[in-house]
Length: 340
Image (cartoon, rainbow, N blue to C red):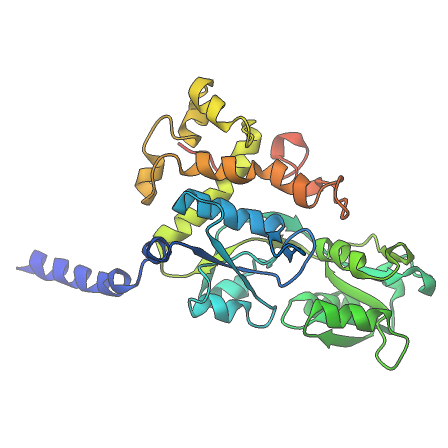
């Protein structure tokens, strides 16, 4: 009887989790993945003149759709601002948030979300007009520094300036377009500098009328691990979205490209590659998918390196070097657990 009672208590404890709707089931029933993205950040998420979304975060969502639904085009992109992004995820308006968002402890303890991994290692910096003659962030004492609302950037600047006995005037804006307009204005609203993640600084500089008249200062004042996030409480969906990211990273390490994935699955004898591409094991089935989940994701968007270079790399208008985002065996710190 005691054993039965203990089992009953255990099963009752599971009821909330069992009652929770499965995001995977919802996505499959709907036939589309709802992905929260930046309303317009070059390189990460931007709607083109043809109406199609493009970018680093966009490609990750397409990889998830390919893995789960078998079709990378089955994504509904939902523009999400810095102020409403977490609410949209919590309320179920999006299935995943892939919106150049920094992974912090507070965001996992005070909001009902979990980060699935680090997709981009970033750091906060400063963008300034060359005309003000500043070559270092430490010359910005008493400057008007502009920020987007709903981000952690102002707090990081406050920490730095307090440490250096400097002061500044914060100016906040709700959207990138509002900030860009004010940054170039010569009227009442003045911005001596704009502080944000460096990846965003590169994108914002492209929006300015004369980008070559602005410079990104050399100081990086924080760690900004960017990554996708999902709602807490759905471990299966968390596992799927995490391992799609890991598949893209492992794909680059193993040399799998969009155009070579099928051939490598058929002919490459390496056990770690065969497990990744579904030729051995039941790793996809164990997550609730089939074993070709990673194969489809890699065929749809390519490996991590292909996604990076297509959207952010040296051949793009942003011209961002891989840096920390290079693979761990190529001078960077990008690393994913193995499929085994």
